[in-house]
Structure formats: C-alpha cells, structure tokens
Image (tube, rainbow, N blue to C red; front, side, top):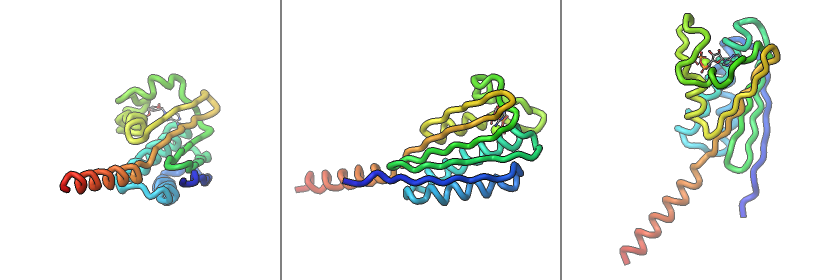
Length: 162
Ligand SMILES: Nc1ncnc2c1ncn2[C@@H]1O[C@H](COP(=O)(O)OP(=O)(O)OP(=O)(O)O)[C@@H](O)[C@H]1O
Ligand SMILES: [Mg+2]
C-alpha cells in the first residue's frame, strides 16, 4: 500500500503585481511533486494567478500589504489557501457570480471566482469586511488514476484478443 504523502509550504510577499508570476510559478513548482499533467498544472497556475491578483487589486487596492499562500499536499490532492488582510468582501455570494465586478472601469471582467471554481475541484471564500479575505482551493491530481485505467483497458483488450 502507498503511504499518504504529506507536505506543506508557505509563501509571503508584498502585494505588488510583479509578484503574481512569482506566486503562480512557485505554487506550480511545489505542486509538481504530485506529478500532475500539463493541463492540471496550468489549471493550478491560472487559479493562483486569479486569487493573487484579487488580493492585490481588490484586497489592498494597490496599497502595500502582505499576501500569504499556504499549500498542502495530502495524498494526491493539493490545497492552496491565499489570504490578504485587506478590505474584505461585503457580499460573497454576489462577488462569486459570473461577470460580477466592483471595478468595471478597470477592464475587469468579473470572471476570477468563476475561473477558480471551474479550474479547481473545490473553492471556498471566507471574508470579513475590514479584516480580509481567504480563498481556499483544492485540486485532486488524477494522473495516476488515469494511468491505472489505461493499464486496465490495455489488459482487457489483450485478454479479449485471445
Ligand atoms: N481579495 C479580495 N478582497 C476584496 N474584494 C475581493 C477580493 N477578491 C474578489 N473581490 C471582490 O469580488 C469581485 C469578483 O471577483 P472576480 O475575481 O470574480 O472578478 P474581478 O476581479 O472583478 O474581475 P476579473 O477577475 O475577471 O479581472 C471583485 O470585483 C471584488 O469586488
Ligand atoms: Mg479577479
């Protein structure tokens, strides 16, 4: 039997948009231990990028603050928590709706949360006005299961040929 793999890392950086690429690449490098597919890794990068951009643009509104990321690997899943201590969200349900943005003037499309929800298996938003926001996302890396399925399929095909 395989042991359940557990690992953890934390990142903390200043809320400058230059750090968005740093955050997305760092999380992807950590997630690589789970041996994800290129597509799974791209999904994680996009989701991290959306959450970090939100913390910088909405949480701190381009004032200086700290963005924190906590990543945990358990078994074949990765959990990513991205938090800020910025202005917080008044109405979380409304904020999560596709196309809702509080900054239409800044060419925002209001699709960040929708993208995070679609690209990850789970997404939860916790927020208190004046205290900050935390986005918790989880993704299960399915690569191994797919490979096992493929092996089973090939074995079945071989036995059918006999
Ligand atoms: N960390 C945050 N702090 C405060 N408000 C937030 C935070 N994240 C999101 N919001 C609020 O939720 C709204 C929706 O976020 P979402 O990412 O879906 O869209 P957007 O950022 O406005 O546009 P896009 O992500 O498409 O550029 C934002 O417009 C903002 O009002
Ligand atoms: Mg956004």
